Length: 235
Image (cartoon, rainbow, N blue to C red; front, top):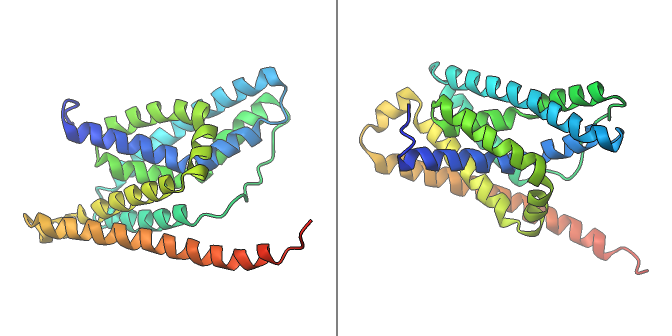
C-alpha cells in the first residue's frame, strides 16, 4: 500500500482527480439530460441516487481493471488504449449526446447509471493507470472527484471552453499516464531496467506526439470551418 505521507501518493491522487474532471464533461451533460423531465423537487434526488449507483459501478469496474492489469501484456494494451483516449479527448466533436430523459424518478436514476457505465470506459482505464495498482487511491480519488463533477461540472466545462489549454493539459496528463502504463509492462520494464533516461525519453515522445496530433487535427478542422463561416451572408 502506498504511504499517504509521500509525494508519490499525493501526486497520483491529484492526477486521478484531475483526469476524472477532464473526462467527466460528457457524463455531466448526460446527468442533466436524463433528469430534465422530472419536477424540480425530484431532479436532485434522481441525480444523487443515479450518481451513487454510477459511483459504485465505477469503483467496482476500476478495481477490476486494476486487478486485470496484472495479467501479462494487458498493461501494454491498456496504455495503447489510453493513448487513443487522449487523442480522442483533444479532438472530440461537440454534441452528439442524445439521451432519453426519464419520466419517473426511477427511470431517470436508471438512465444516469446506465449512461455513465456505457460512457465511463475512458475514466476507468485512465484512473486504473494513474493509480499504479493502488486500490485505495481509486476509491479516494473517485469519492473526491464525483461531488465536484455533480456540483461544479458546468463551471469546469465553461472553463475548458474559455481556456483551451486545459484540454491540452488533460491530454498531456493522459498521454503521460498511458506512457507509464506501457513502460511498466513487466517485459518492457525488465528491458528498461535501471536506465531511467529511456523511460523518460519515451514519456516525452508519447506526450509530444499526442499533443502534436491533437493540435494538427484541430488546426486543420478550424481551417476547414473558417471558409464556410466567412461565406455566410451578412445579416
